[in-house]
Structure formats: C-alpha cells, structure tokens
Amino acid sequence: MPLSALPLPQRDVILAKLHQHLQSPHSQLVGLLIIKLCHFREINTAFGYQAGDALLIQFAEHICGHMRPQDELARIGDAEFSLILPSLHTGGQALLAANRVWELAQQYPFTVNGHTPLPHIAMGIALCPEHEKEPELLLRAADLAVAEAQKTGNPYHIYHSQMLATATADLVLEEELEHALENDEFRLFFQPKISFSTNRITGTEALIRWQHPTQGMIPPGKFIPLIEKSALMEPVTLWVLNTALRYRAEWAKKGIPLSVAVNFPPTLLINPEIAELIRQATRIWGTGQGDLILEVTESAVMTDPKRSLETLRHLAALGIELSIDDFGTGYSSLAYLKNMPVNELKIDKSFVDEMAANQGDSLIVQAVTDLGHNFNLRVTAEGIEDQATLEGLREIGCDYGQGYFLGRPMAPQDLENWIKESPWGMAIETATA
Image 1 (tube, rainbow, N blue to C red):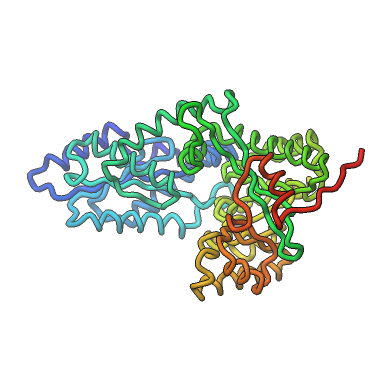
Image 2: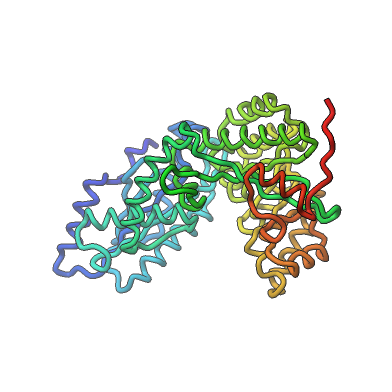
C-alpha cells in the first residue's frame, strides 16, 4: 500500500488543527507529542525506500489502533509523526500516552522484506497552555523536547524553557563541528584496560575529544550527540578508527603491544560498505588478529539483528574482535548472543558503581560474568572507582577492568609515560627490526 493511502495530514494541517483545538471555547489542556523514528535513513539505505514506507505505514496504523478516538496522528516529516492529545486533565496523561507509544513500538513485530527491525523512537512532549499558547511555538517546544530525548537516550522528554537556550548554543556548536574534522580539532584519548590475571595493561579504549579553538576541550556528552544526528557519523568514526590504529602501530614499534578498542555506532552496523572500509584501514596500519576491538551496544545490534549479524560476521572474518558494550542495559536475546561472533562482554558502569554496597548490583555483575564465561567470552567491568569494587570484581571472577581507579583517559604520550610509571604498566620490550 503506498504511503499516500494512509490519511496523514502535513505540518501546515497540523498547525491548523492545533489552532482549532487551542481556540475552542471548550479547550482544556492540549498535549502535543512528536514521535521520531531514529536511524530511519539507514533502514531506507539497507532495504530501499519502498520498504521504509511500508514500515512507516505499519507503525502509524499500529499506533492509531491504540489511541483515543479524539487523538490525531499525522506524519510531519520523513520519519516523524505528531500526535495531538486534546482534552487532557493533567500533563501526566501526556506522559502516559508517550509511554504507551514506546511500549507499542517495542512489542509490535514490524516486518520489512523478511527482516524485523525494531523501531528506535524518541519523543518530545509539549503542553498548552502550560508551555506555549500558540500552535507554532507549541510545535517548536515539542521539537526541542524530542531533540533532548535523542541527546539523552531517553524514550521521551517533556519540554522546559531551558531547552531553547540550549538548542541555540547547540546549533552554533553543530555548525562549528562541521569544520572540526577538516581543521584537525579532534583528539584521541586512551583509557587503559587492565587484566586481573596479570595486573598489567593489555589494551586501551580510544575516546574522542574535541579541542575547540576558543572554548577549549568540549565534553564528549556535549558534542557526540550532535555527531550522531548529523552526516558526520561515518567520517568521524573512520577518523577515530584510523587514528587509533596508527597509534597502536607506533606503540608496537616501541615495544608496547596493546590492543585498541573503538566504539562502533549503530548507524554503521547496517551499512553494507562499512566492513570493506574497515578492512582497508586494518591493511594500511598492519593490524593483526586481536589488535582491534570494535565495541557495539546490545541495543544497537537488536535494532536490526539480521543485518547487524551479517556485518559483525564480516568483521570477525577479518580478525577483528567484537565486544558488547554496556551489557545488561539493553534487551538482547540469549539466542542472538549465542549466534553473535562476539569475544567480550563489557558490564555497564551503572552496575559496577554500587556493587560494593548493593547486593542486587553485585548479583547482576556475578550473573553477567558467569554468562560470559559460559559462552567462552572475556568479561570486562567498566567504571571501577575504588579498591573495594576492584576486589569485589576479582572475587566474582571478572577478567578485565577499566575505570579512573585504574587509569583515566589520557593523551597518547601521557599513556606511554603512565605505562612506564604505573604499577599497572608493563615492561617495555625493545622492538626488533
């Protein structure tokens, strides 16, 4: 069924509908929900525009079938919908509606060309007259709220006035970010990864930083979300990859054999060309088996398991090791985990933080460690901040660890100095010709 067959008004019609509701003499609290299907461009690239349109139709029909009769769903962008919620009694009803939409998106088995991609959605909520009283301003408020949800990784966000000032500052940063790569403003820092069996560094995780020409070092949480929603994701990731492999090769020549781990964004997992681009990078820098580890989140893999597994298998065939990052925070199936060409599980910092004081978190860490070992995987704990946590992880049987207690992210030369001076360092061998 062509998308035009679905009765979805456009943005100008939505503004007119909002005006009608807001000007009604019987008007109560009106909610506006903006629903954005994230990474939809990648779905179009992988399966084609006709398949993408079919997914939009399935999504819209499924949501419409579970809303109140007076609620109005409309398509206002390529992969963006608005949901007008008239006659609300409290703002909490809008939050309940957002939560319901999120649950519907997670539970429905959407099908595209035999694949079952799980739509990742972000939502913004704005209320009239609580937040804005004019249709255009209410729509802008909901747009700002959905951008905040994307930035924070939350399913939905409700508007607050500070978002406008933040959005203006982000827009300036986003414009400057477009030139940061060509102006050589990005830097790589490396955080040590320690083996609990040898008490020595065995590898590092490469972490991008932005050395802004006037603002100094920009925190990652401020600019990485801007990269993720722009066309810079692929070129920046390839820059990180090549730069990390260059440093690894230089360290190897100095007698410092370290693996490097690079965070791999979900948008590239379904890019059919990415495996070849990575293969070229490994050949340029002479990368051997186990020298490069790509870290992917479990939620990224589950967005489109079939396509993601295909990419992961191509990468594994190149001798690249794969790590499931932030394990325990997503929703991966054990059946998929069994079939993934994975070498490592990384336990999320949120569980490690409180494990010394919270038995529940300690049990989760124990369970993930046992699960990983049962699948013959290495298990690494992130976010180790003190001696008690370190000792607890040793007792549990965790294999590796990262965290500020062991070593904070460092510039490349600082890492070399740290290796020479830290008790977690290594004896540097004289490289042979």
